[in-house]
Image (cartoon, rainbow, N blue to C red; front, top):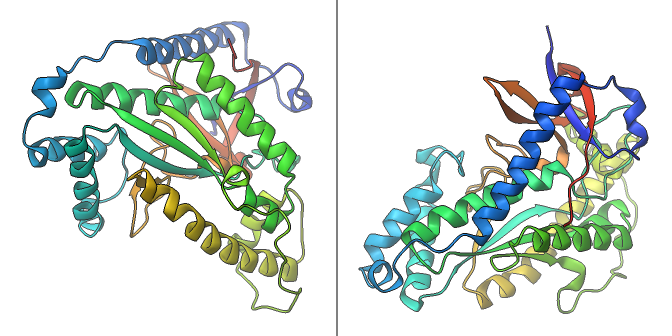
Length: 336
C-alpha cells in the first residue's frame, strides 16, 4: 500500500483539481503544524543569544571549533558518512577557527537551486517559480542551526542561500525575470520571519560581472547520456526532449557550472566563507535542505506524512510521485 503524503498548494494552483483533498480533520492538523512551524522559526529568529560572548569566544579557538564541527556533523544537518569526511574536515575546521579568531559570524555559502524548482507532478512538468513549504523547511533548518551555534558561539552564523539562476538560463533557457522574482519572494519570506539578520540570498544574475548574453557552443552530436540523466535534464528543462538535446544540455551544464564556480570563488574568499551543498560531495560538507533530507530539494516539492502525531517532510518528484498517494490542502506561505 502506497504512503499517503499531503501536498500543500495555494488555492489558486490549478494542480488542486488533480488530486483529492485531505479530509477536514487531517487538513486542520497539518495547518496547525505548519502555522506552529512558522511561529517557531520567528521565535528562534527573535530569540536572545544564550552564549556569554566574553566567556564562550575567549576560549581556545581549536577547542571551540571542535564543538562546532560536531554540531555541523549532527544528523539533524549532515548526512555524509564519517569515512568520506576525512578529507574535508581539516579545511572546514581551519575555516571555523579563522572566524572564531576574528569573532565573526560563521559565513556559510549553501548551494541551493537555480531560482526555481522542478515540478513534482509528471503530468504537469512546468517548473515552479514561487517559494513554498519546501523553502520554509530550509529556513527551519537554518534557524535551528543558528540557535544551536549561538549556544556555543555568540556571533552565530551568516547563512547565504546561493541561487545559480545564470546557469539555469544558460543551460535550460529559464527566464531570468522569473528566477529573480523567486529570489525576491524568498527574501521577503526571510524578512517576514525575522531571519534577515543571519540569512541572505545570493542571486547569480546580481553578482559582479554577470552577463546574460554569454555565447553557447554550437549544437553538436555528443555521446548519449543514460536514461536517468536524460530524465533529470527534462525535469529541469520543464518539457520532454530528444536524447541528442539532453546530451547537449547536460554538456552545457558542465560548462556553466565550471564557470559559475570560478565566479563564486572570490565572493566566498572575500567573506572567508565555507561552502555547503545539499548532497554528499568529495570536497564539501553537506547540509540537509529539510529535516531528514539527503537529496536536492529542487527536484520537486515537499509533501508531509503524518507519523506518531507529527509531520515528516518527504520530497515528491516526478521520479518518486508514483510511490505515494497524494492528497492536497489549501495553504500559502505567509509573507507577514
